[in-house]
Length: 451
Ligand code: PFF
Image (cartoon, rainbow, N blue to C red; front, top):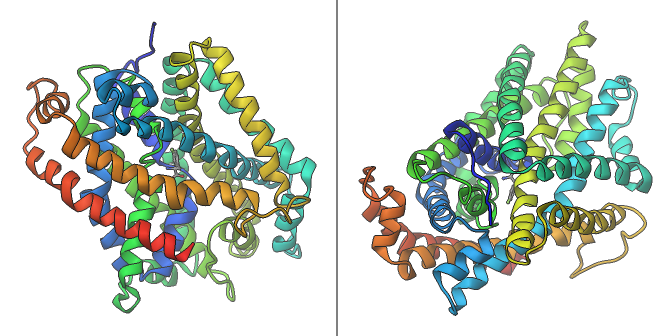
């Protein structure tokens, strides 16, 4: 079967970084930093990226590139008849589940970009908390924007690996970086920028405990798109000359820089409006920030407008490149393993996810009473992968590549059959065998306790 390949090194890096850079960087990371002791959390997070995130990413790249197959087939090829191959199917399943609710939240970003353009966020007297609640509980509007977002992802995926994923990543990622730089500059010009930076960067070690480390590991996993079949599938489109260690470092560095810059955008802005507290999650970007756009730019409402529109476009672009990477593993699985024509496979994924996405939309309104273990449907779609499937997947990948895979095979894959030097191979294997399973195991047990 003809398989797509990324055509350039830049395409490889931007597509993979596009998967990693997403809503997790822009709203989740800054609030985690704020809640967990500022710079102290950043330091711990960096250690987690280095010692846990990057080795797992390298393993996923090696597995995908070695087999040049979708995630499910990749594990089947490397461990025929062995139970390890469940990880392949689980990766596809996790991507599928996350995609169903990710398109809903991504639809919100699209709606807010429209709302900003249409001047709906311009009236300082608006109660933006109510505005948000009315939007998410309005079935037609939230479904409309979910469908719109889904249609865009579907279009890109049906264009294929090179003309779809690679081409659009090459346009969207640089655009995203430019918008970030403009927004950081705007934010730094605000009166509250010093206080915001203090909040973000002052290490407060009194807030650091075992919880902090666990949050940092969870954040690193989500932010780097690990254990969800996405990076493994993308790596199956890498050429045999792709430098896997270098790609891993580039993606980790880009993802971390974007997360830090997002903090530099949000906190100076939030602190420039008296009385506004940094909230967590959607509340921060959809309820608090519209006040900032209105009130922070005294005498320059046009700057507030530019800031607001660019900010939601930024969120939209970040969500789009991540959503593409969630759609692709499932499409590739149906196409290659179930032998369904690629366009039809993409359509099946899009339609199924649209139906489940609509259910997720409605779970904020008319279906809000339907509960799964006490959670609304959309929250359950989030919790199942984040709290159970992802940590289990992380442990399986590290044990699989550390203990089960032939060491020579792994080393040959990572060094392109000896053409590259990878001096840290022994440390990498040690981390996979011992440190990572124990660290993720602790996160997992902790999450089970707090479930
Ligand atoms: N890494 C993305 C983010 O930070 O928002 C989210 C994500 C994308 C998670 C792809 C999982 C995934 F497979």
